[in-house]
Amino acid sequence: PKEEAKEEAKEDKKVDKAEELVEIEAKAEVKEEAAAEPAKEEVKEEKKEEAAAEAAEEEPKEEAKAEVKEEAAAEPAKEEAKEEAKEQLKEKPKEEAKEEAKEDKKVDKAEELVEIEAKAEVKEEAAAEPIKQEPKEEKKEEAAAEP
Image (cartoon, rainbow, N blue to C red):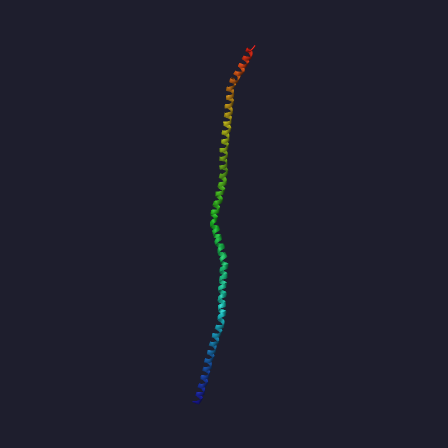
């Protein structure tokens, strides 16, 4: 029985030491975790910063993509505007030609009027010529009648 008691006491001591070791290891683990906590927080912060940096990098890319899409969407309108401008340029000479033709017609009519007036003036002068001749004839007759 004494031997058994000794053996039991040894076993109890071993168990106590094992439990003590387990407790020490648990405390050490808790301390390690507590010590690692700031590092974990730092890692979390770094990850957040990296994510923010990535988002910041992606934002210009997204903006550029959006701009490209907008430009692509605006392309047909630009083409349409170019076509309209071309048409207007084609129409402009036609319009200018029409305006020139109107101006030419006005000039032609004005020239025609001047011509008509000139002819009328010539006719008036021609019609007035015999009247002018009559006073000359009378003067001649008067001069001949005088002694």
